Length: 376
Image (spheres, rainbow, N blue to C red):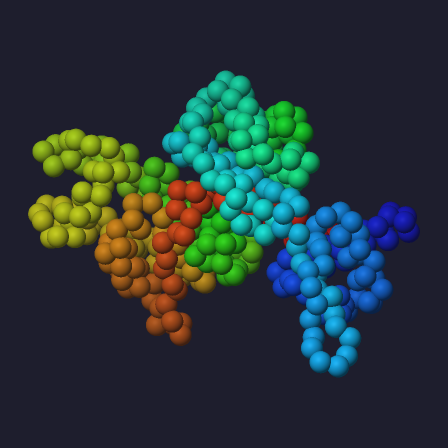
């Protein structure tokens, strides 16, 4: 690479560092930016003027009082860009619109899309319709994130397989980018939900978390040192041991085994009734719920010991009943062996609930916009 290429790379790296600091510490002065980065005041001023012209940041007041020069403060211009998040792992699908500060501007359920034909014919139109309804100027859309239940390729370009969506080997990122003319990113739904909690939810500000879902979907999303961990083949987080406790499978088994108690109602209603009866000590549900609790707690405790996260987030039916979440947490403590730490790993329910995967798909765009670039 020539001298000009090296200079441009260095400029891009320095600018990304400054934007990252403004995003996480703004409002902040140019003087503070120079002090934190060790860049010269001139370099900071030139790069921040670029960012101001691009509309990413703006001057938002001054700091200091009394005698002396007051310093102009810089912050993200939150209304000069938006990111979209769409989640196809729920029925109905979910969509969100966030500004550049991650503030939710709109949340909406949308119709379910199943099968390659429906997705090809309906997804781009659905996104365009949402954008038009919210009256968002297309030139201000900086990212469209798509959360998917299934296995993605290493480049996050193709949906290799999704049983829920009934899709195999579909080049979704390229397809959407060509249809919309906008930057598009794909992410697994559990990875997205975990990232949403770390970015702006119940684990905000933490760097290493484990997000476990046992609901209509089953699995884990891992955020390790601020990065989504997907494993060598992109299959990290698959938990086959929990599949029998997924909402539909467990509800069907309960209905077959105890038709008088669980023969009627939607799957989630049956699970809620089962948990309530089990917590009340009614036989035989209490013993069966207790057995399920022990198996889930044992696995979670082992995972906590292995990864040593800052927080464990439990989502789905296992977190919807406060008393049951407390009981499950107590059993996880038993298996965790937390006496080796000053305190046990906190266990929380998700903040974003059913919108978590859509929020995560959108906030990954903010992460891309304001992360620090490095030399590959």
